[in-house]
Length: 605
Image 1 (cartoon, one colour):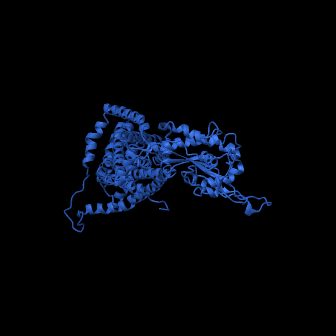
Image 2: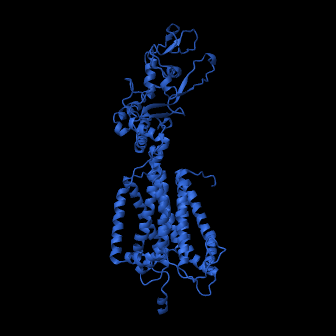
Image 3: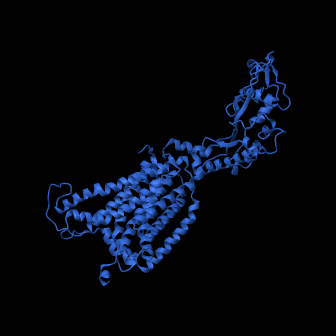
């Protein structure tokens, strides 16, 4: 679709969404036809046109609201949400187009078949001619005779309002308890050997992942050959500053339960100073040449002589010995070689001389440090919360290190220190998950309000009621996530955005029917709207989804049982409860005035 990649989430959710919207509208269209008798002197085409004229505006309202909601949801920064929103919006437009064209044509042909008393499968055979009457389903009779009169009772309406308001407040208090993240073992089937591997890691692993605090000095803002700069990084020498990047990691590692840092950083400056002051480590080849060549650690002592640097190295000494240190292998005779520990972590580049007085062939090679890192280890991390909290703490420490190393430095010489670990790329999304969720849901809610306000004929009260009911549904679903151990991540966020769209189906049909219904008072109009549309909503969305949802309960993968079975079940049950119980009661109290007066009332006028 226009280069937008399809993901597993799309293939798993879009069919459910299309089915929920499509079946609901189809039930409304079919049941409206069944309850409508052809008028005298009305042709078959006119009869179909009248039915479609009654139902299509409600179908357009729900489909347009949901499509706009999803298309605007593509503004999200999360790729999974953006791709789902685009596919969902386009799928609903195609769904609506097929309903008002292909399905209307097919049902029209089927109506002609029924009128001609022809059989369903063997349509060429004709049965006995029967008088067509108004057909009322069992659910319609139940709503008309039992449910609607009971719900519109004065005491029942008052109890319903109080109960749903109390449930909303209780649910709102539970929302902050939702955990963010997606544990990696949840995505594995129950019989997978990879699941056992993840569980063993959680139970027996005694070390956390490594973390690197990278000093980005690509623009050579800091000269690490200067003693003042080295003193801001080192930790184990008397000349080091009292607070350095190394001492900061050491302090944080003493409280691993809060810092998620288990060890102090491996500091290349400390190791370099130990190496250069050790005659067994810093050695040069015996030669009469003016260019000094490093003596490898494995070279016999007879071929080498000490560098002779006993005090702190000068800038020039640092520039030509730093490369030697990074190439030196640690051995028993010299354990301070930096090749194993810092060969990849400290990057240097050659310094070219522009002084023409020297012969380039005899010039001593010199180097400067471009960037480096300090390696430490996180404490043992087991859950998603541990991982993204460790990332947060590492960034806080990196900010402190950045402030310390840039202290007393001009702004043009400032450098940036940032943390890196292999798992950060997967868990960084959870740092802004709540912000992304709120933004996506707000965009969806605002778009639904605008579309319903326009398509309902600028009916502000009806639009506000639909918006309030959808907010109640969302808050209750979020509470179910908290109670049922459903974490907030990209999968559940997509489900929440979908829940907003499906909630329109539970609200829009009944609300529009109420607005168009004529009656002596709001209670009578709410009863009529619930009787007319309630059975279709119950049959089209609620009952037809249970078979598909219940199958997911037996899936071997936890990601299906948690994020699809539990959330889909919550969406259907919570949406049906609000659409068929709470919404009619709210309309009976606060609904808009009738747009069309009763005929008898018009005659009196």
